[in-house]
Image (tube, rainbow, N blue to C red; front, side, top):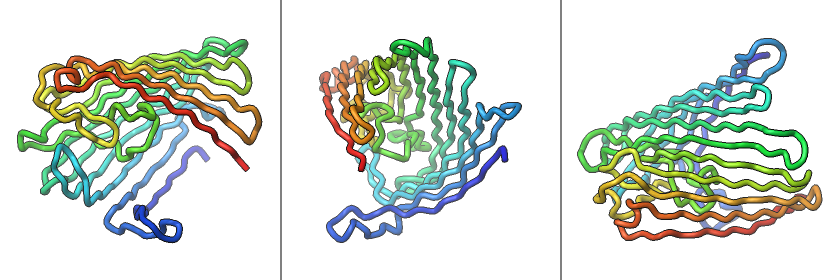
Length: 271
């Protein structure tokens, strides 16, 4: 079979004291339909086209000091695959709906992740990059809300530090990944971050606005450097580290924010 289709309907879990945190928040909804089609020729399934539709309802959505219900539909396409040493994962999405006192939503996002393996021997160097664009604006002028909502706040896609968020953002991120041994990986990434709409704020993870940036001229948010690595001494144990440094750009500095550094050490035990 060269295609698959799925559908789901979910409610959020209420995070509070109690047996297994098993309370349900019936007003916080995620539903959707997704599919995957093999579009490459022959019997080698190297290229997939994945259409998707997501519907979310968030009763306590917060944006720029305003709180209200956010009902949002996300319609998108994802193209992923490989051709020899080149791998790619590209997604485009459009969002509509109503939010914050029934204001209409008109937002979009484009995300392109790609890598090129330079050698399959030695340290197996791989060049990596991702380009991310997410719309913003409209909060202060009474028009349609143009802030793209990434729908999830907990992800290391832009870093464990959550210094940056996928809203009102242009991010260019080249990097390199190495595998010094079969159980060790190292990666470094340098990102240049700018906001798309100068009338809107710059955002951290979870759509948390950097206070005051909406009133500051300029586009350069900052440059984010990420160094991470992992070591698996056994099949049951993995150790990892992550160091991230955000060098504040003109926009953050003029709003009163400085550079910052985040360090994380972790261990995963499987049993």
